[in-house]
Length: 287
Image (cartoon, rainbow, N blue to C red):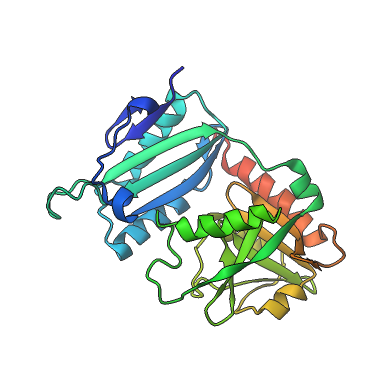
């Protein structure tokens, strides 16, 4: 079966999908994307993904002529055409070809889907190592806190981490506050309280981040959003990462530093379970 993608207004075979060489996303990174997962044929937290996409399009002047219903229907078409229920999806929206005038320019909308593949099970059982990113996040960069297609610096940092056998790299701001991972949000546990950098840091308003915040509030765990230093990171009892693909990923080493007792901690383990349950309940077909 030929893999199908949704491009602009229809399903096409992936090897026949064509985007203009003058597309602003291709030439300048003038675009946005969302990485999503579907379980049981239902996209997890689709409303949150689309809220983030639409807000960023507004703020960054990315032309978005589509409504939420149109995009949701297009996603369903891609899943159905590829006979996928558990899938990793990517939605990309750019400002379209530069050859047309700004008023006439048509956005490019691309939706792809692939069979869902989780991270190795031992990552969740034993935890992972992360490194400190050698680069810095600038709070006044207009792209900070937005999921844009200008992701090259993140990919460079992630590749450097992988070369050191680490799963992620932690970014700090130019004034040395903890921000996020290359592709994840970060949480710390200290004395049974949960800490995470505030959105205004700025960090990406992660969909999984929001889910974790909801789960801890429902279960009477104190959640504190505050600026965090490297000393607070290294002093944490537990540290974990979140995104919708990894869900809750425990960190047991930050470079040569051991987190806590080098075992996956009780708060992280509890949130791993609750997050998995939440996804399964959210993605029931009968809802």
